Length: 351
Image 1 (cartoon, rainbow, N blue to C red):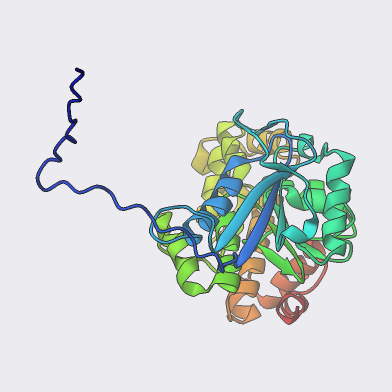
Image 2 (spheres, rainbow, N blue to C red):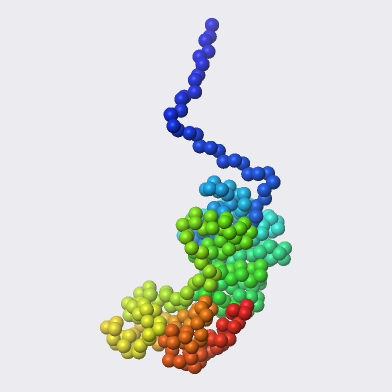
């Protein structure tokens, strides 16, 4: 006779509770925002990660990450992995579905010129989504891709300062904007990348899911403040602080510290322990411009940012940027930027 021994469950330690299972999503709840991500070859990871993580935290209660209030997917014309600029590979979730499956299609750009090497099917999909009235977002150099697809003619595009000249040469019929975290032009959104992608994601989540969910996504990522979209100050020659020539690097840092109190180039060379001739040659080699021209352009770019983001008068801005008077500031502003300070302010604020 076989005796069956009863197996008693192992007693749980006193005071230890089993973790509660999260309740399943309600059957009748649909997402408030649906986003499809297309990753360009050599895409930049930070703007993609910031944008998608903002959606993830806003999509569910606590930190459960279920796609309830927000839904997202990485889409592509094939399921082959896409390599980021840092070398990591991401596998798409699905082949291109109907564009109307999304509220937004986000084109994540990356290193130029590789990110422009998109399959024809990708450019066709972006155009079809636009025809279907799906909003299109270009992150990082994704704006280049949208411009190449023909979606930005006669519109504005947020561009990183380092890529402004390339953009102007490639797309003269699109207006580059380098002093905003993102540009919303009707159903097209562009963002220069980096942490600015988080600002754009927060704005879109607030629009569709409400302020509470937007702030949840923001605070979960330890970003304690929300920047305005015109937050980005200008640093047009910041790349010269790592150009490899110590004279240029230190000169540019001195120029940035004395935007409002410029002094002569001979004095600048003296402070650096360099001769004026050596300094001119170093700038010609590294920047293709004289130190005086670069310092003046720095001050004009700072003035442009102040015109857009403050209510100071043109006269106040002229003095703050180190110009002797309003006429001097206006004359150089028009010569370098193609319009007077007042015209620039009226056009940008009016739009």
